[in-house]
Image (cartoon, rainbow, N blue to C red; front, side):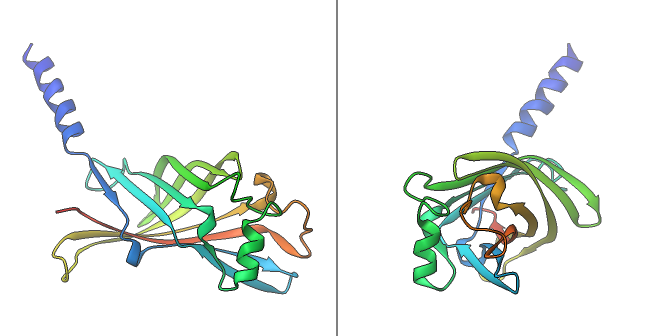
Length: 189
């Protein structure tokens, strides 16, 4: 009986100690770049996004990430291009208003590098993707006096896997889209 009570206590304690943190929007970026005409890169980002980090273990070995972004917030610095990306030619923001990523595993590779696997839903299509995460560590932010966690997330997806821009050949818009995201997660007071 004592053993069973101990296991129940441990299970309840781990649930109660779970932390869910939301990214600091002012210090986070959900970015991407794609090749244009095979000779240059066009960079962009989604300005309206939220990411959460949930974990119970201080070493983050059970970390779970979710990301949701408003497609209409796509920003490449050129309004005409942004409007074209929002159109049915590419993201079709009216029909597919959000992109969503939900992690399914977070596995240490070496040092501070992790493999982040999850389901990415984009343009109405859900695919498994594997991203590389560099856990940059945690510090006490001297401005807010709260612990803050930092991550750099990198990866590559194929736009054709998500039926994005299918009317444009790779010689115009590269099929591979590089994801580069920097995330800061402060602990709520």
